[in-house]
Amino acid sequence: MSMTASRVWLSAFYLTTFIGASLATTSASAQDSIAVKLAAAHRKAAARAAESEAFYAAAQPLEMQLTTNLRRIRGDKSEKAPWRSATVTYADPAGRPVSIPTQIRTRGIWRLKNCEFPPVRLNFKAESTKGTLLKGIDKPKLVSFCQNNDDYERYITQEMQLYRIFGLLTPASHRARLLRMSYADSATGKVQATRMAILLEEPELVAARLGGSVVNIKGAVPRDLVTYQDALAAVFQYLIGNTDWSTYALHNMELVQMEDGDHVPIPYDFDFSGAIDASYATVDPKLPVQRVRQRLFRGYCHKPEDFAKVFSLFNEKKSAIYALYSDSIGSRLPKKTVDATLKYFDEFYETINNPKRARNEIFDACVKTD
Image (cartoon, rainbow, N blue to C red; front, side, top):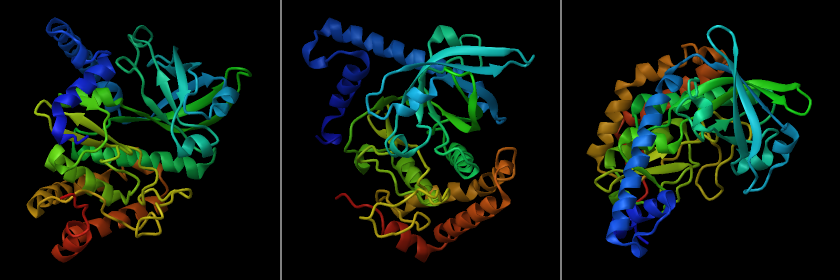
């Protein structure tokens, strides 16, 4: 089904998915009730987004411990893994431990199958986080180390930098908080690893900040999307050298439906990007590139003047983007990594500021749909 052909259906899909009712089988009064519930859900999400703002705004990595049965978590490789009991603990300003009960469940595709410690999602109850640093946070993703060594920990900090860059460019992005996470086994009480991690803002909170709703349906094409935001997200992916995404297929991309029916794409999951250049990262063999450091523009086509607006923003934000690599988080990266990353970004800026190269690499390479 075409997204454009049925934007009303998208609203019904949202209601069915998140509220639990179908417009096709409900009366007018029931539909009014659903609308009330939807409005209440939006207000709740907006309130949680506001409550969690201070947590995500803090630049200093938070020292935290995750305690769970690590053997069981490592063994949960299926797509329908169960929720496991866990506890997260951090120290308050006075140094007193604050422990919050939660549940965790494994997630992901490649990392789930290949990593020593799998990616997980946390599940907090509102009453458990009330009055803590995690207030307003419900079911965030935890981006953890894949292998327990320094190279893989560096990849986490590098990916955090990419979330920060996109956050500089637009509020239509995931907020993220860098953590210094210790992983303790509840069966033995021993800490098995301490590595950097990322707690990622939930899609519902991103949508609430934008005044929209998350929709989980594939098939978006340019006429379904906010042109500027679509071009911005695609050029950002080109900046970081990421080909592991698709708006049409909702692969490492979320969609927020705005009140006017248009959709804003929200990218996430950047570990296969050239800017990180992870040792395990590969490109789809169907693509005309062989290495992740080779850029390939995979965004939809738009008018040159639309891309020009996006290029202008990147030029405006260049100094701020580069400054991220010398601040308190960027300074955690080895100088060799910083130098290589900024040189990689230099190549991007040479492209967007050279009309011929921009035409060849972006305008002529874009994905045509009509």
